[in-house]
Image 1 (spheres, rainbow, N blue to C red):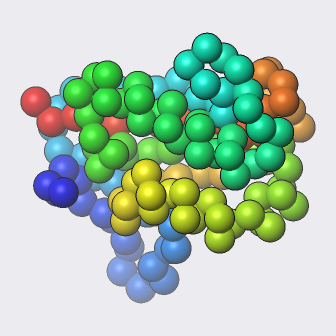
Image 2: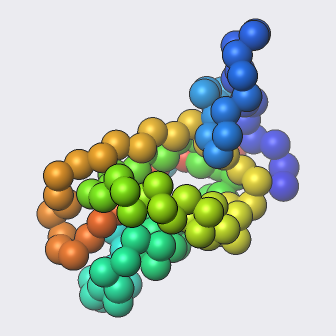
Length: 135
């Protein structure tokens, strides 16, 4: 995996687990990826559980990235919107395994926001991202 960015960690800060506090990207083309939910390419949900929806949402996000010529390591930021905090906390280990399978050890700047609902039912998670693809 070629290095396309620098991880920023202020001096004296504890190293975050599963995300970066900041990413300094190299010049390139910026891709803004709209919120991706856990449905397939025909917009059908196959599960009402968080881990399979997370897996599909991440797969969808990476499909958009790949279509633009990018790779997982080009993602600089992901914002996640989740409707069920207890389900998220209970599934963290499984979600981490899904992340490792699809993203490896690349951890961009990330935010997790818990929300009352998502537009597309029975969606539980939505992921949006920003990537900088080298020219």
